[in-house]
Length: 609
Image 1: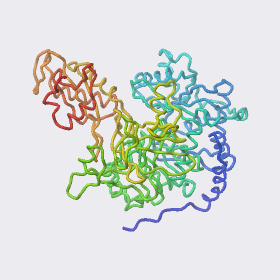
Image 2: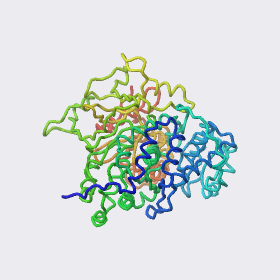
Image 3: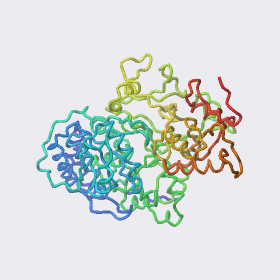
Image 4: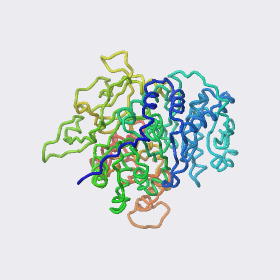
């Protein structure tokens, strides 16, 4: 079927490309200098607009206005002697969050992006914020007047916030003329990206100016931002690195206009995303794997027929396992309406490497059919016709440039590099690797300061992810770590397990295991739990103080996990006491439990050592 021609920038849009190119070529060493230069080169070009309810665009902030707001907040922070201080960012979607981040950068405060509280869940939410406030010794909380008002009563009575100064950025007077430019070292911290779950001890990844600028240039060059980028649409949350860096900072740093919508508006009506791309002729817009599936499921043939997606040149697919079936469904649904298959660009990355490590080129997604038996033995071998196979999507490659990136597949136990085709842990080195974890020297040394046997002198980041190299292409096969990723969000199993154990009185504390099972269609969350000693597990409704009905427990677990974590528990196994896999010291064994589940032997009992 004929596809509409990919749109090109108009003459008016193409006018500032030379000025933007000059800013990019200047090679600024910090974000402040780069965005100040953009504001002077293209002052009147639109920078960021907010899409009200995901539809109507508000008045855009120009690059000059964005710079002025940033300088105004920075001047206030300078007056408060905020250099090096941590500043929480608590925002709903809107232009304020963009200039608040840049205001921290200009004022040399360290931004700490977190989500704003959802109405009705403020108390529970603030407990999460409290952990970050304590870990980062946070001094400021940046937000809007509306959110500040919403939180005022809870903040006044909650310990841990006594020394936090709350700043409504939309109520500050214009102090931009009072801002004093200051020298910024490339290794200075720009922000902390917290990666912990809701109740886990928080852990902040330290991202420097050099990390961010390197990633922005790397991402922008491979994604063609300078070549054909004109506009971007972003619905992803700003407090995730994917939304902050790929959705906002990279296009803005390349002089592109960004149309920003709330992730809630996207989830409520996913087609708002694609309609915004069409309406504003966006060239760049990204999302996790689930979002591409969601717009297929939630759209009708009539809605699709109204679209012209010929403008969309780059769609990064990252942040969670990428599935061939999901990409196939999206291409089937939207290539007849202008989306070019080559625009689908799977990538791989993690917060500890600022964002993206490998990126697909201009050829679109690449697929690898692996022999499942060989894969179970940690080897990749192309599947023969008729044999059991698993189709995997490549995650792109490392691209050459001044960023000095290096990626190796390593045996996690020995630290030795593995041969091509072998499955091992992905290790990364280069200028995008973050400085470590905030106030976590031991964890930083264990994760960020690793050496490959026989290659002394170069530090590598252990990603915790498993994969193999197919030529230059990285293919991710799974995870060393226990983190469960669903719809672009990390969930720590300990958090889910705690929720499960509190959901029903018959469940035994400390005897629950949660894990994920990856299929080509979805990530399935599995919960395995034990009942307490003395309880009788019944399949039918029954009376009695020590009788637990299986369906009642399953219903309670699903409800609690859905409410606390916005997750679906796909499978729930309830065991009698003593059958959950544990070590001799009493620790739960998630990997063994998962293996037994996949083998179908969990309900047959677990032998004790």
